[in-house]
Length: 132
Image (tube, rainbow, N blue to C red; front, side, top):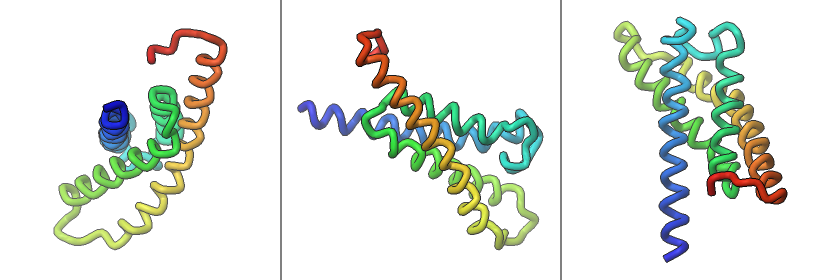
């Protein structure tokens, strides 16, 4: 019973990561005006990856290494859906390169998730309330 609950919890957080990854990509155009988040000014993309990764690592520290993969998947889905709706009748041959670029940037969410998980661990160790 406990194992099934943990599996559901992990799946829920993974799905949340996909939604948040999609949101990082989609919000870039609304917030910064840049079609791709890495083209945005003011450090929008690296900062959002660090913060969202950190939040997810804090939310569920046991599998902090998994959440950047969910963020990556969400960003890839957003990029592909954006490509499908914005290209002028052609296929973008740079999409594989873009996915590699997204993967490199997603390393920042692993840093954030590690920091979030470590912060949660320290708070638990010191006996502070963390919500879980």
